[in-house]
Image 1 (cartoon, rainbow, N blue to C red):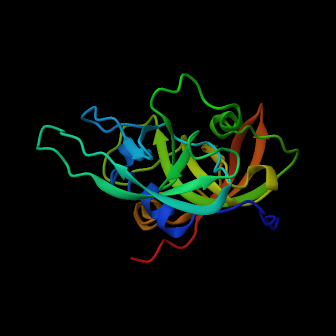
Image 2 (cartoon, rainbow, N blue to C red):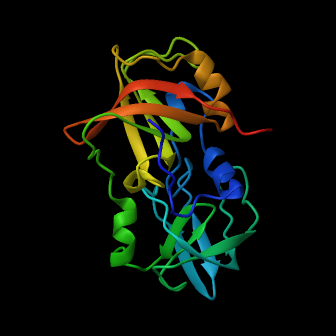
Length: 230
């Protein structure tokens, strides 16, 4: 089945590489980062006299206005000396004013003293459920993989496992969403160590033939596409 073309805004290459840069180079650690690092340093950006904090992983990419500004990511002492402050590009969101929140490298920031998410931002953090009848296909950026099996070597991948991807093509309701796909012994073709090393580690894509089961995405087949150059 040919995937439909998504109309939503896609993550730019710079943002995509920033997201991919948070991925581990070992299968056991192939997950994206949250709002603070391993040393407990909060992810803070200062803009227009206000401090904003990074707020988790987005389940759906929000639409931006195309306008940008500049802020400062505050350095942190992780025990090895304080890091320097860093100038960063801020992307304005269509649904929010800049004082309510913005994006930096694909991460959502809101005022540090905010007590809750703005109503317009809540759908961006809602897990996307599988709602189609019959088989369909999606493709997207491979963000990570988890498996209950003990890892024997780098890239070791045996079913059952779960693949997380950011959908770039497929049914419109899934485009720009982060989805988790379950693979088992019946999935054919399967992903394997070669795919992990060739695609996941290098920012490649996954093409998935899927069906829905109780709101979950189940893989009938999985394969990898080209990796990002460099």
